[in-house]
Length: 142
Image 1 (cartoon, rainbow, N blue to C red):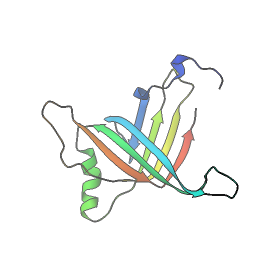
Image 2 (cartoon, one colour):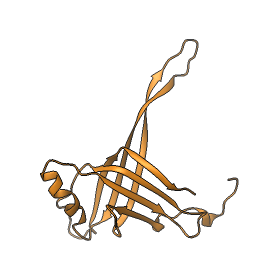
Image 3 (cartoon, one colour):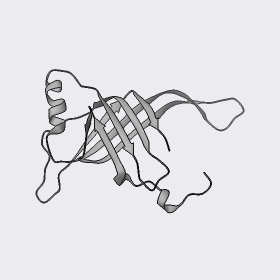
């Protein structure tokens, strides 16, 4: 695209996140990214170092306003039983002024921690849950 209007820049306020079929209305932020693992490749008569992809690592973070015990309900009993449960996460970003909607399914998401309690006097409650995943599916692209 050569040109765009200011209104077409996507505003994260229009994002949604679904986990285990439930919409997380308390979502404050969501990130899922793929880090490409590479190994340096040196070649004769070339000063620059090249690289070869060896694999990738998928990580992300869900940031929530603290309004209920949803994450405790979803994860606590499994962890106590020795199981790190896997979830399907659906990220949707559909700013009405943009050129469309973007929906991505994160598969096999496993959270790295479970926050049992975290609060401070005179601070709004927020929880951050990092996770790993192994696959994703692009549903809608802009």
